[in-house]
Image (cartoon, rainbow, N blue to C red):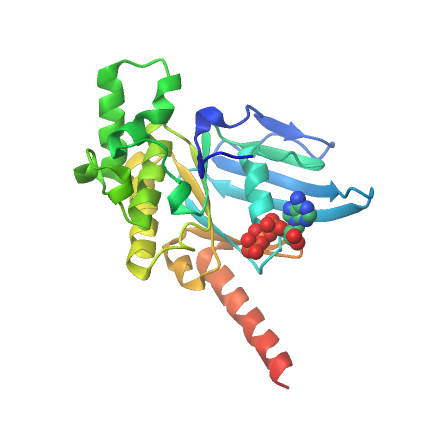
Amino acid sequence: MIPTAVIRSSALPLIHSYSATNNGGSTPANLAIDCRNLSFSITTRHGKVLPILNDCSLSIPSGQFWMLLGPNGCGKSTLLKILAGLLNPNGGFLHVEKPRSFVFQNPDHQVVMPTVEADVAFGLGRCNINRDEVTSRVAKALDAVGMYEYVQRPVQTLSGGQKQRVAIAGALAEACKVLLLDELTTFLDENDQLGVIEAVKSSLATSQETTALWVTHRLEELEYADGAVYMEDGRVVLHGDASSVLDFVEARQASYNNQNNS
Ligand SMILES: Nc1ncnc2c1ncn2[C@@H]1O[C@H](COP(=O)(O)OP(=O)(O)OP(=O)(O)O)[C@@H](O)[C@H]1O
């Protein structure tokens, strides 16, 4: 069982790159995420193999903010967990820059320590750095997500969106290179949704070295993204610039609605 909603980079498995078949090769230096022909299946108790991901390929340049979209059950969370190293693919080539952090959707499970400062510093306990460096990293990370003024606040007094931003700050404090964010805005009101997206966007602009992949169902969030990946039935159907993916998904939805209304 995963105890908290954010898995800091130091807690993620150290699978650096994975090549289960001969689909591998070298990853261009500008890519933070590069996966080719990934497949994933599970075997039921009765020995039946259920394919979940089929032949998924995508690449995301370093420093960019990308979104991952698709209908319920198409495999977004599974793909994100593979990118985080929480699940191993059955086949394909996978490269994800390290360190990486995974932030889950439920803000009430995001934070583990009594104060904002202690929570953001939590993962740094495993790093060999002195107290001044911890204080400086915590301050920079909270600043990047617009939460510095809350540094001494008890976490139970924060809103859902503020807890998400503190969780993201924890990942940034550990200097994570890849942030994997699973439907963070699901439980948030409209103000908090915008606040969290803007916090990710501005933290990427501050660090310039962090890449984020954000799973969402909300097409309107695409306006914040540099690029997007659209999945259906365990496959990557399209990946590229956010406006092309938006046009594609809207056309897909219109055709689906027309079929249903005729
Ligand atoms: N451990 C499991 N056992 C059986 N089926 C599973 C398991 N994990 C995932 N699945 C199935 O794999 C498919 C993909 O699940 P996944 O959670 O990755 O989809 P998703 O696109 O993130 O869905 P949603 O948007 O609803 O969160 C679903 O049909 C799901 O039921």
